[in-house]
Length: 360
Image (cartoon, rainbow, N blue to C red; front, side, top):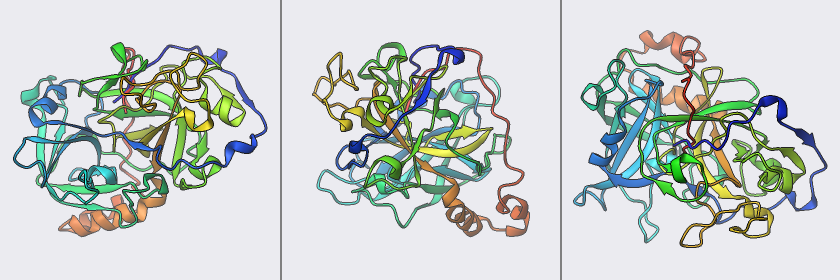
């Protein structure tokens, strides 16, 4: 999921708010790309070792169209109770190449082990049921509502369970995911490498979706992936607000979809989509472009610096979450405190001392 760019001293960061240029009210139509990926279940298992967030894991989704091939989609999810997982809607509502909804046939969830970091010690469970938000539109992911939940066939006892952050979301955060690594050694310099280990990285929410885009919801939180230069500062060049990076800056990569974003140890958002900074003009792939890297196929959005991350803001969906939890819990009385604002669910975020890598 994560791919770190560079270590930047916080004291050197510049945050200069300028007037928003006239082009700020623009459309993101056709530019928002969900950050899940496709693989086989045996490949997912390679990423199950390690990970300091024991309540964040990989989900492998099989579809009607892939049932006989062994392939499926890889996303990330987080426990909001010992028996229920929060993820992105597009992970459980994928489409075929013909634009038709591809029926989900099974969902398997893998959590990192709480003791020795080995594949044999990981927690695995299938989903007994799942629900995608009724307002999710696969043809317009920026419209919001990209959120889903599923219930596990058995409880993940002893693993971290996370509450929902209810404060101001426009601040620094930590993203956790189990997807690929963008660029060589996770530098985010174009291209991705298959690696499904849990990773984490930092960034900063700067805008709500409708602050910039005419067709993106207020319930979408936006950050950009900086490399420390003004040239590749998406919001600096596109919005006149200069902020060239935070320590351990990261973005999202394929497979990070549905992964949690934390503030103060609670979930503020879930990874939804990425978009090239070229939406502000100038194309991509040039040294002076906002987005300096294009894929071998010429695509601008490829999990590199100079791109935008759009995440589902979770707080507006607490009603959806509580409703689903109430529907799948056999004895609601045992969940009273959890359903009341997730009061006791927050688990302190444990940070690894090693350099984080960016994944989305």
